[in-house]
Length: 247
Image 1: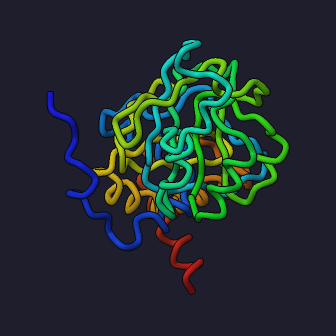
Image 2: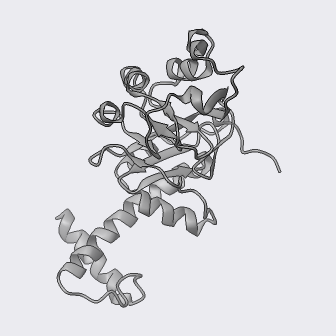
Image 3: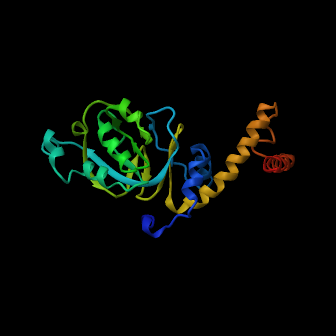
């Protein structure tokens, strides 16, 4: 089977990222599920900061394989073309650096210094299914950081950086360069780039309907016929609710 078209061939509508930034990963997960995408949630990855802002941006990928003594001595970082360092310096502004650590969080994939550099360069966020060292400093950044857990050991003990800008797996999910990464308190979703516009367009109405439902439930309404709206009166009440909000 062929890979998806490259990101350069799929332009996003001007408001897509802004719409997704106002939505939640739960809504996106449901919309992707309706389209047959049942494995789009990055497993085992959560924000380092509990109050992190919603993260949205195209994926810029970095892949690690296991280390060996001959490939990962302590002075490996002196190499000017070390892929981890190159990724930090080349990840585009507004993109999300996504790291494939094979789900191994026993060593760090980056630390607060490199992550601070990403923030200064305007990177929209970082996602790793490995560990993050200097986690307290990383969690204090304005840039959202999602990882499996804090982990003190340097990446050289477990992770050998090899590829930039190729398809990877992160938390068991396929991530193609340019796919839209979206993260919040519930974790991280991977939105195939070719679906991003239609997913974003649907989130607005979905989020609004769920706000209506939550208000009804708080007022004592039963969820039967309300969520999902199998009772025709539910949608009528929703339209009236929207009209009142707009008045």
